[in-house]
Length: 381
Ligand code: GDP
Ligand code: MN
Image (tube, rainbow, N blue to C red; front, side):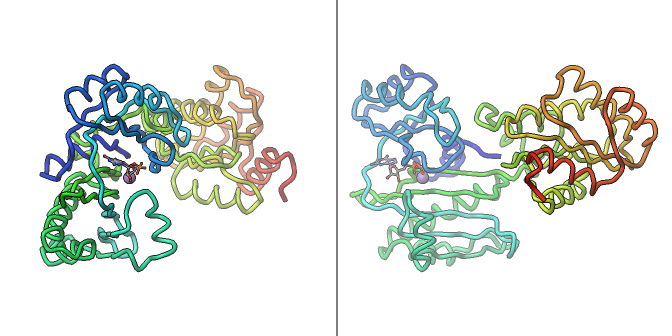
């Protein structure tokens, strides 16, 4: 789960990190009022779940409250990488002498949180990683002991030669590490970490990605979810207890079980197609889930054919068949559907489908080949 910059900053501020004062606005009038309260030049910042807002025109300085209003007016409603800006953060502007990058990611290979820091921070950190990787220090942390003071100092000195600044930075490293662990993050980032002309360190941007599996035991973090900022299909899927990930292809897949879903996507690829999604309706029998699944898949304009691949164990294939019939009666399909099912109550399922004008088979290979051919207009092998 992504949270907004203002939420990440609240967490960090709560741990004592140097975050400039600021508040969130949904209208330009509110933005003006916040800027008046702050009483100093501000930055108006789009709150959307993507990086690179600065480059996209979603981060603007404003010297006066009236200017903050104008900036908010321009940014609210703006599209950044396909997402509409619904909120802006109005925050005291910092004077910037230098920008550093500080981040922690959960590294699957070492199974540890890994610090990544660079004195060359700011908006082009990907560029730094690609062209001058020696400007980035990576340091894995053993979670049994946490971030040790000597490690925090080493990170601080990689950013600044000056002892006072390195110390201040090492304190921020500890705060970021605490935030990362406490909130169940897979990523936590301050970019840029700024040094002001007066030599003060300030966290000007904050980003956190929370591991969804950590949310159940962290209701306060879970409550930070902003559904209006998420992919609508993924919201629908989560509320229907479906495991769904949108992809870029055109074969909509409805499968039960994550393993079969992966195998299905592999086979779609093997036959020259591209899956439009990963969708696991799970192991239980519930026609409602099938209805939701079809609703989500048919809402994607890229989908040119739908492929059901159901292996009935605990899942009763007749329940799936009933779900398909119910869903398509409510919303007639505009694209072809290929159904493969086998296992529990297969005969009943086939009967339900045939009586309602669908054809189905029990051969996975044939079904996938057919779905790919339908989606590509016969162009794939
Ligand atoms: P991002 O582009 O989504 O990462 O948004 P950031 O919050 O990191 O802002 C992008 C850039 O805008 C920063 O790297 C800064 O150069 C600039 N910026 C952001 N906040 C301030 C500020 O308070 N003062 C000044 N002078 N520049 C800022
Ligand atoms: Mn940034």
